[in-house]
Length: 179
Image 1 (spheres, helix red, strand yellow):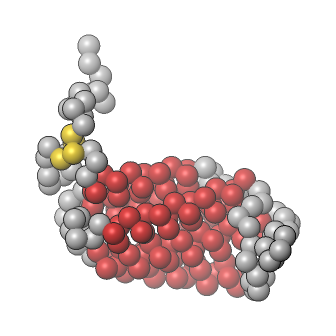
Image 2 (cartoon, helix red, strand yellow):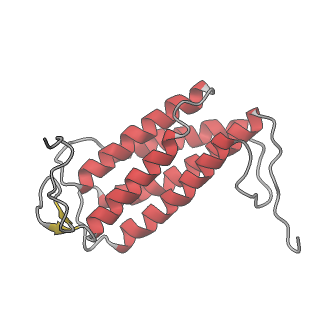
Image 3 (tube, rainbow, N blue to C red):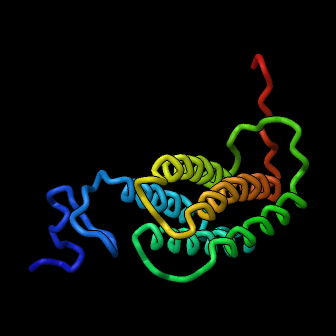
């Protein structure tokens, strides 16, 4: 008996989105969808944070990433990515007001939650590069706004990581030339 998750449709290296079928799994759209999935999965490590504001914000971000994935998959859902950008800009302001002003480069380090947020930031930046590189191959509504969203998201994840370390009383590791 075959389970519902096992369809064997992808066994030949091909798959489908909501609007296109029989695409190579190496297609740019699947690379972008895979990066979105990886980013959300990393955030899953932080989703049960003991810090309520982090928990709420990560949950909202994961939901936003699912929406972006649905856009790339061809969904016609109508939600403004600009609302997501506004949300992120408010969250950046919130965390920045609580963090110590940054005067040096820092190493991504600290408590586990912060490290996962730093890792998510790196994956977000890779996703942004891949999405921009493939913008002519993968047409998506609100594409320009998605790039702005990903840019804001990497900043948000950075300030969230710093905040988590601050409330855990973990000193940031400052980078200096010659060390």
